[in-house]
Each structure stands twice: as C-alpha cells, then as structure tokens.
Image 1 (cartoon, rainbow, N blue to C red):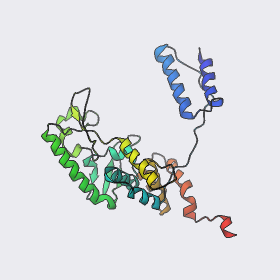
Image 2: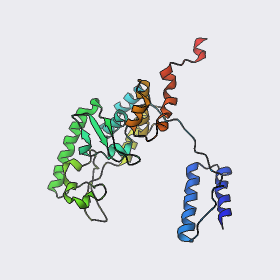
Image 3: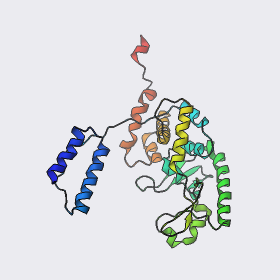
Image 4: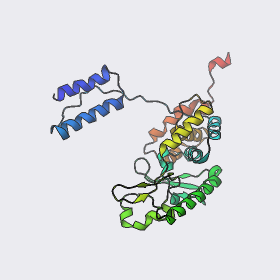
Amino acid sequence: MGVDEVRCFLSHLAVSGHVGAATQNQASCALVFLYRRVLGRDLERMDSIERAKAPRRLPVVLTRAEVRCLLEQMSGVPRLVCALLYGAGLRLTESLSLRVKDVDVERNALTIREGKGARDRVTPLPAVVRRELLEHLQRVRRLHQEDLARGRGRAPMPGALGEKNPGAASEWMWQYVFPASSSYVDPRTRIEHRHHLHETVVQKALGHAVRLARITKRATPHSLRHSFATHLLEAGNDIRTIQELLGHRDVSTTMIYTHVSRPARNGVRSPADLL
C-alpha cells in the first residue's frame, strides 16, 4: 500500500472510527516508522489527512474543603507528597524527583530542576508542611547512612555527572527526598542505586483517599496542582505570578484557570436565585 491508502486509513480512524487525537497520532507515528525504518520508504503528502480533534477540557479542581478532607484521609509519605502538590503547585514527577539539595528550609523554597520543557524554577515551600518535611528528611538520612554502611547509598545522577564525579552519587545532597523502598541494579553499570518513590504509590493512595472522602470528582494527583493555581487566582494573585510558579512557557496555558475560577471571583449568581 502507498501514501493514498495510508491516508485513507488514518482518515477512516477519525471519521468512522471516532478515535481520539492521541490514538490517531499513535497510529500515524507507527505507520511512518514502519515505512521509513522497515520498508525503507518515506511517506509524503500526508497533509490532507482528516485529523481527530483533541478536546479542550477544563481541569478538575477541588475546593479547599475537599483538599482538606482528602489530606485527612491520607498518611505517611503519600500524604506529604500530596501536600506539596497542592501547597507548591508541583507535578507528581517533579515532587518525587526532588533531591535534598533542592529543599531550602531557611528560605521556605523548593527548586524544581528540569521541569517540563527542561526549565528550572523556584516555588514556595508551604510552611504548614515544614516540620513534617524536616522529620521526614531525618528518617531518610538515617536510611542513607544505613545504605552507606552496607556499601550502597548511591542515587542515579543526571546526565554525565556520575561519570565526571563518581563520588557524588553517595553524597547526602544528591539523595532523593522521597526514596524508593528498595534498590535496583543499573543493567549498564552493574551499580546498585536507590531511585525515587514510584508514581503509582501516590496515585493509588490518593485514589483510595478520594473514595474514603466521598469526593465525586475525578480527582488525580494533578488535580491538586490545578487546585493550587485556581485557589491562588481566586485569592487575587496575578496570572503572571501563577505562570511562573507553575513553570508554564506561555501564559495562555495558565489562562485556562480563569475559566474555572471566574464565577467565584466575580461573584456571579444564577438568575434563578433571584426569583
């Protein structure tokens, strides 16, 4: 089959199959890979494909009462992670990738390294979790010292830093704030490392808390980041400040929260309430 047949198939997925934009794009990339890498042919003239439209959905935002109730149903490390997601507006991978050196307790600041788009940013450390975080770091340091005594205690290093400075992986400052419960062996170097906590641990804990709290919204860890931005906007903070805290490249991405918070900010009442 040639370009015409491939184009008809991809258009059929969108028009007759009613697949989403992500599914159609996945099929398109798979076919391009097949023709280019396996069959040795380039697919050209693909511009006339009928594309599936990606829906523009509003984010799921929890109220302050719902966030409080949700955190009350959680405990341990997952609760602390979720408190940072809401209190600092972090993505789940950003919070789990935090290293000890990125936590500045004196300045109440968190430094996010290589966030989405490979950009660094600084966001406030919530004062309400400061003491809990310090106690958690003390436990993590004891674990790190026990690992060192067993000949372990290494964290995976970013880029080529591990080769330039082999001893850095064992230093306290480079350890993850939320380490995994077990170590793993790097198949390339055959060196044992302790990675950060897996995302599913927090996702499952939050899903269980949502059910216990009887919250009827489709809440995920990312909903806490959405709630952080929306509540800041409702409190009167300007959109540019929120953009910087979230790490958005374009302010138009941050503007979506104005659609969620507008009724609350403007005090709009339904005309039915005035009857």
